[in-house]
Structures are given as structure tokens and as C-alpha cells.
Amino acid sequence: MSTTALSRSTSDAAAPRRRPAAARPALLVAAVLVVAVLVVLSVGVGVLAVSPADVLHGLTGNADGNADGIARAAVQKRFPRTLLALLVGAALGVAGAVMQAVTRNPLADPGLLGISQGASFAVVVGITWFGLHSPSATIWVATAGSAAAAVLVHTIGSLGRGGATPLKLALAGAATAAALTSLVSAVLLPRLDVMNEFRFWQVGGVGGASYDRILQVLPFLVGGALLCGFCTRGLNSLLLGDDVAAGLGENVTRTRLLAATGSVVLCGAATAVAGPIAFVGLVVPTLCRLVVGSDQRWVLPCSAVVGAGLLVAADVVGRVVARPSEVDVGIVTALLGAPVFIAIVRRQKVRAL
Image 1 (cartoon, one colour):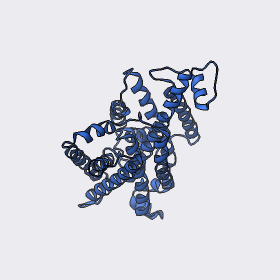
Image 2: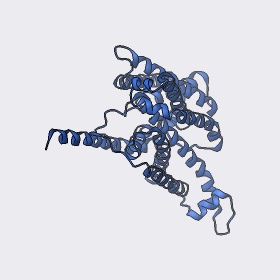
Image 3: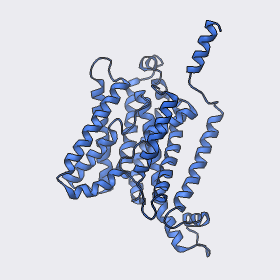
Image 4: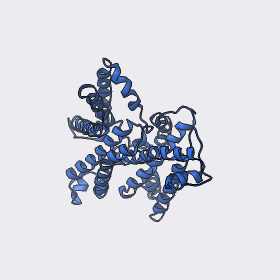
């Protein structure tokens, strides 16, 4: 084999796989259909099994002589839980995708960068020292904590020669997450009453969902999602490097600031309403990039759909494996996400975006 042919074959092997443009909408539609099936399972599966017909009647509010009133009540109780799982999973998926694009680090994640821990620490301080218990106050406090943690991680990662590199940001995030976790324990240890209240929230779950909580968190999720969606073109430019993005006319600082703000709002709001749920923002964007490529105009909606489906599926699994008790969704996502992510990294040898 000639040197030219060898170099061409080597470059082809190293180049990332690209999906045909026509296949992306079909893949996204297929993902939406899978999520729809998961929604029906989530509403119908539990201690009391509900048939698909009763699920439909319960959601539409239509009375049916063949439908059990208890089954309809179960549907109406489970639907807010399912809706919250959809919203939180989509928010975490988009937040993780944006963080990975902003930092150009495929290992970036709200948990690994300390963003979720910042929200947890802020919630603990609010409950312990200021007596904050309302969901609306918790959302504001968690979002502020997430923003403060993000600023701290970026500041630490920017120190020294070379500025905020992906490796330095990851190391700064890991150190910040460990420090904030220790501070949470330090605040809780003298207050057993607060610890008993906080430990259920800290595991991460959607069992306490209600329409009031969903309406309170919805403006934050919509605003953060719109802000992230507005930055998709700039995020594509950032993946080429700051110098190339600036040469293409992109305002690198503004794009990174707006995208990071949207990601922090999504993460903070989702953490406030459901607790710190791990691995969704880490695994979902990686899977989506393998399917639709690196174009953020497709990665973000795909991450939203797959993240929503993953959290709904995890909630269903948690309700099935320990009947009549439940396993919180945060535990299930950790158990499912860790081996999947390890397998992806080992197979794809992911090092940078």
C-alpha cells in the first residue's frame, strides 16, 4: 500500500462517523415515539397496574363504565410524576450537552463540574439558616447556588498558563464538587432535623410531583432551554476553537456566557425540583453525538428527547424492581448510567469534542 493510500485510510478511520442529514429527522421522530410509549408505561405501571385504555380515559377525563375509578385516580396521580420526569430529564440532557460544548470536554456534566453540588449546598443553607421550605424559594436558591459554583469553577480553571482548558475545568469541577459535598455534610451534621428532610431530596427523585411544583419550575426550564437553543450556532463555532470561532465573526465571550447561563438555569431548576440526579447530563449527550453527529442544532433537541425518555424509564424501573416500595430515580440513573458511559468511552476512546 502506498504512503498516500495509507495516510488516507488512517485519516478516514480517525474521522468521526457522520449520519446522513435525511436520517436525523427520522431518528428524532423514532426517539419521540419511544418516549411516548414510555409515558404510557409510566402512567400505567405501579403497585396498581392500569390498562392502556384506562390510561387514556384517565388522561382525558372521560368517564367510562368499564374503567375503574381507582385506576383513573392512579392515572391522575402518576401523570404529574411522569410529566416532571420528562421536564427534568430534558433539562439535564440539554444542560449537559451545552456544558460539554462550552468546555469542549466530553466528560463535562453538572455533577462532575460541581454545578449540582452548588445547588445542593445553597438549598441546605437556605433550609438550615433561613428556614426556606417553599418550592419557589428553593428554585431561586438552587439556581443561585448553581451559578455561583459555575463561576467558581471557571475562575479556578482559568488560573495559570493557557486559561480555562477542558482538563483544568474538569479538575477544578471535581475539586469544587468534593469541597461542596463536604460543606453540605458539615452544615447538616449538627442539625438532624434538617438532615432527615434533606436526605430524601438529596437522593434525587420525582415522587413528590404536583402540578403546582411543575408550574413553578416551568418558566425557569423554558427560559433556560430557549437561551441554550439561541446559542446553537455559536456553540458549533466554539467546537472549532476560540480562534477559529472569532475568525468566523462569533463573539466567543458572549456566546459562552449566554450558553453557560442557560445551562446553569436548567441545571439549577431541575436540581431544585427533583434533587441532584447523576449521569443524565453525562451519558445522554454522548449517546446523541454518536447518533446525530456534533451539530448542536441536532444534539440539543436529541438530548432533550433522550434525556426525558431516560428519566421516565428510570422512574418506571425504580417502581417495578422493589414493589411495593420504590427505588429513587437518582439511584437508578447512577446504576444504569455508570456502566453505559464506561462502555461508550472505552469503545469510542472519547477525548475531546
